[in-house]
Length: 475
Image 1: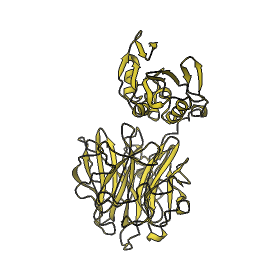
Image 2: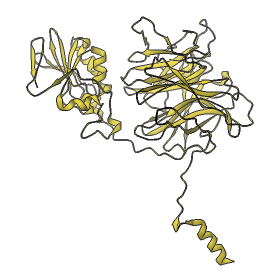
Image 3: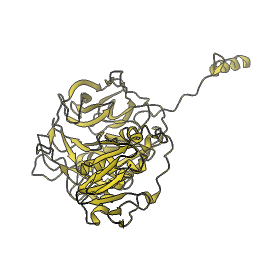
Image 4: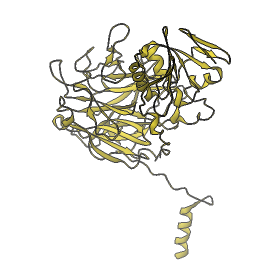
């Protein structure tokens, strides 16, 4: 008998003469403990983050929690990253957080108060923090969007950065979806060239829960449809060629499985730069639950076919395999973003950079030349330095760089948008800047050092001259 047991154990441990590989850990579903819904997922500072709605009666929805993980399996709760105690105009129904990182800040957009008409106070607000773990404090002291436009209730916002660095907010309930352009510091909205501020982009079947994804040149507009309290809640999508569409509906990709869960919807898409793995993070209702607020956050694999269409999602009880993130790269030296007093070097040449990164201004009667845009986060600092010297930043007519590494060029796209300057680059550096650093011979494989690509206006060669207002620079 003892020999037989040993033989059984040996067969169990060996297959084809080789040990059976241990199965990777799985997240399981739901991935978060407790009742939560409307999750938005991100990668920040080398960790996965999920920001959900606390799923409870509206009067109890006065805060937002966040969750972080290194591998999608083990999650840490960060309680009350936003609380209505810090938002004087919000008092109930705090919903559907959306968060972006910009210029050293994390901006959290949220809906509050579930307004039913323009006479009520509430809508979409903005809070910010230096950390993804909060605490987030009210940034505006009032809602960013406080009324109905094009029939859209101001809820279920999603903020995203377009490929050119522009930030947009898409939002809307009651079957209407709007898009608007955010200004540089997220304190307001920028009208479009036709004078309108809110453009309706509602696709067929849209109800709420918009999410925008840009992949391989295609804009995927995703949303929830059906009733959020019922089993038929689902996610569908359309495809367009710009953030404004037009969007052609493709179909549903996420819906209930009566053997697993019901009411699957209001999702986000999670993807780490450089990873082949894509995930859909969403809420659903466990089997047997009838309370409309009993919703849980789950995660499953999202797949695209060869033509770029999203394949129907298989909702599971097992979730996804552990997917550890690589170590966080070394941080930039602190003095790179430390302000430094601007000063005149000689004649019409001025220093306008930070303590650790150089940037120079050549002032002329016909406009100015800026040499080095430095980090994107440094552009507001450079702007302030130029203007403190008595010049207008918008009068920069020519933008040059000393070399094409990210630390001297990452802000060029932003400078061009702000000034309309002609971007002139040495011939060998053109492929680097026009690829956003992807073709940098030294840092090209560092996806964390990529920056917004920008089209070069003039290619310079050795001996070429750049002339402006009596100033002559020779390449």
